[in-house]
Length: 166
Image (cartoon, rainbow, N blue to C red; front, side, top):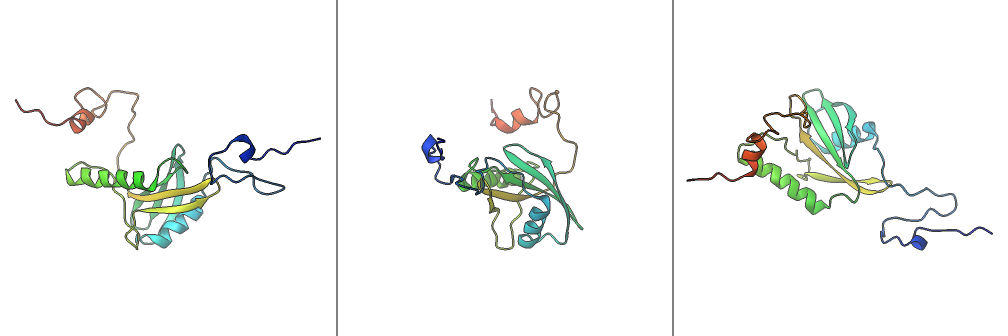
């Protein structure tokens, strides 16, 4: 005699995770979104001109996509489900705006047609949010080697510490 085990039976405290009874869908912890579908969503919701391509650059806690239009390149960050709340994402975006106001060169979020910076997406594992950012040209940093950014007295220490007056 077999015993059916459901998500609730093993103590799930996540109300957004549904059991997969019978022949339904199996619950998903992580999914990789279709670059083509993401391209269509961004083209529909952001004033960036004609979108040409979108490709996945990196998967991690957040997935990073490179989106190219006829005029420019952009970065789309798709936050993992249950990784950041909408208020945490908003705080991150406010921090980036603050850094730009202070003269720090960082990529900034781009508002959609409706003025929103972050947008929800329904994914198999739950709601994920995405943000469209300006593209920062340059060479990717190798954080495992010493550079002006990571070296003692480099950019990050000056950025993180308030100036000291004697």
